Each structure stands twice: as structure tokens, then as C-alpha cells.
Length: 102
Image (tube, rainbow, N blue to C red; front, side, top):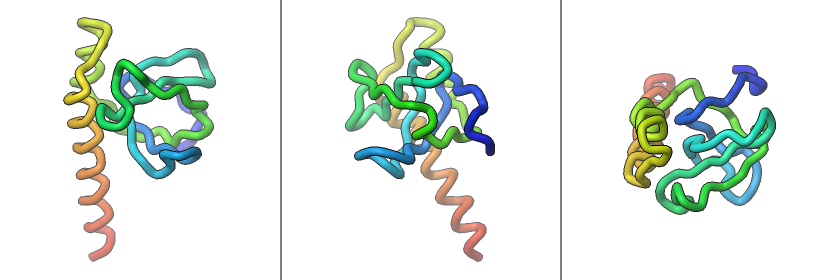
């Protein structure tokens, strides 16, 4: 997947650089074509999102509709929904990795 595709709200990302490398998070805001704000609802709450250069993120094809709907309706999303989106994403990638391993 090419990394220059446009990030979208609610899109899952894998962090490639920094302290939280290899962790997953959700895009909760987009500043411009270089920076987005991410949160995972656990260590990084919605009210304190992390500003990241998209070059340091691996955009995933999965977008959480719950997060998108919540942001569109109220302009915010609960940390529980963020945790659920990250957990669902990690579970789906683990299942795919196990299937490839067989």
C-alpha cells in the first residue's frame, strides 16, 4: 500500500517511528497533508491525541465506522470506541497472520 494515500478520520494506522513504534492507533483529526492526530483510547486518550507526521505512520486499509460516525455526530469519540477499534484491528491482523502461518 502506498503511504502517500490520503489519511481519513477513523482510519487505523500502525506507528512506525517513535516511542510507540509497532503500536496501532486511530486517526482522530487531520491537520494538513503532513500531520494527523492519533489516539488509541488507552495510553493516548482522545482529549490528548498525539500529533504525528504521516510519514511515520503506516496507513491501514481499515476504517472504523463507529469512530467516523461518532466524530461526525458530536465532534468527539469515546476512548472505549477507540480501544474497541484498535482491538478489532489487532484481532483481524492476528487472524490473517495465523492463516498465513498454516
